Each structure stands twice: as C-alpha cells, then as structure tokens.
Image (cartoon, rainbow, N blue to C red; front, side, top):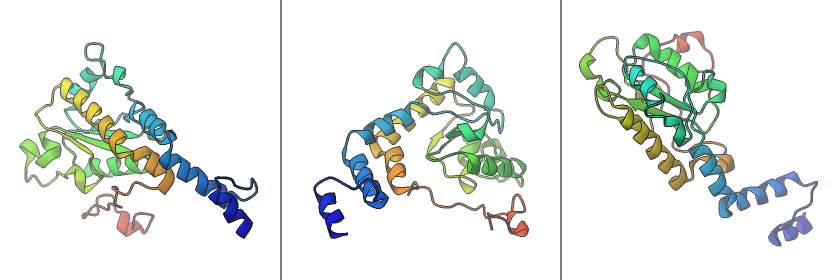
Length: 205
C-alpha cells in the first residue's frame, strides 16, 4: 500500500488499484482543462423537457420557432425526461400539476436545471393567494427566474444564456462529476402532500 501511495504522489497508479486511479482521475478533472470541456459541453447541451404547465408555453413555442431559433444556443426541446437536463416551468403550477413536475424532475439525470418563467412562477401572478397554486420553488430547485406576463421569447433566450454562464463560471457540471452531487441542490420535499407520497411510504417519504 505504501508503494501505491508513493506512486500516487508521482502522478502514477497501478492499473489494478481502482481507488487510487479514480482519485487521480478526479484530481486531474478538477485541475486540468477537462473540467472546462465538461462544463462547456453541458452549457451548450441544454435540452428542456417538453412539459407545458401553463399559458407561457405559447412563448416557449415561439422561442424555439424559426424566428427566434433558440436552438442556435445549443438548446433543444425533447420529449423524454430521461434524455433531458432542463425543465422550463411555463407559468402557473397548480397542485395537480406539481406532482407531474416533481416526478419529471426526479427522472432527469444530473446535472439538471430549472428555469421558471412568468409572474405566476415568481409569486403566483394573477392567481396570487389562490387555493390551487403552488410556487415552483416549493417543488423543485429553481436556477433562473424570468419575470413578465408573459415573458417574450427574447427573455427565454436570455435565460438560456444566463444559465450557460452559471454552469461555466461555477463549474457546476464538472464538480458534479467529481463530487457525485450538486451541492446547491438540497433534497426538496413539498410541504403539502401533493401526490400522496408520504401516505404511500415510497421513496419520497
């Protein structure tokens, strides 16, 4: 073991010793240019899942349409949550829809991000204090908020660019590869039992 540790100090490792090799790989990922490549690739591979929660979905359709073409920023809406890493909450989130949002978010691979657009996502908008409204941050961790009612497609494009800046400046993706989890994402469980999760005693309890 002492010989292995000595080799590790020299920047070498036995092929058969996976623990030492993995540790050296993590260190090189943090210090080297590989980390920048990982963050760059993630920033320009933001695939929002097709999940329309409310009326701001019309602006989402325009944002990725031929006039505004958000795909040129490296972002492409997709159908399955298993192949996406971004949720754009399009306005109001009702108690009924909150369950779907959470389940979709849970299926997405890390590192994953959330953009909440519209006044309804910020504080409820025209449905403020309504009995059937849930704030998005009570269900999933939100990275970017877009104000407006509704926000213009240009604002959606700006949110994509700002999210890319966050990923690359903070090294979100590369740190997740090393640490195994995003530290800024605390495990969130809605205060209200929206899906009967606590009663079911499943993975959310």
